[in-house]
Length: 96
Image (cartoon, rainbow, N blue to C red; front, side, top):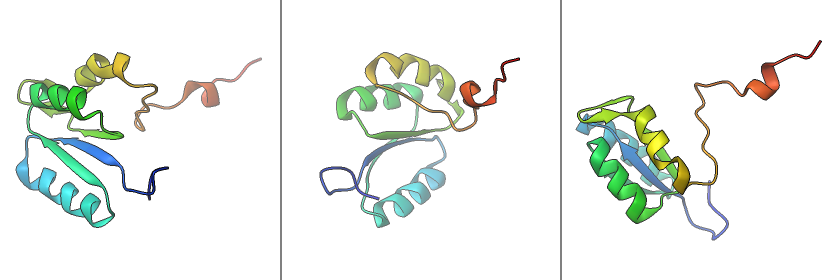
């Protein structure tokens, strides 16, 4: 998949397990995406602010914080974030 500029997306991968981060980098890079790695929540926040990635893949538990807190901390800096684990209630709520 490519973005509107005809190039791959920039993706921040925040995971404290180096083999997982490298595996994701290998898969994403092979598809033409640029990968920025971070191993802590602090690094991820700094790199998200600096690089402004198109997408972020976060580990739920990082050594100095968790992925959900990191999402909340970066929320004002991104237009819309979607967590695929959390259902979109607009689709699931039924009206009488």
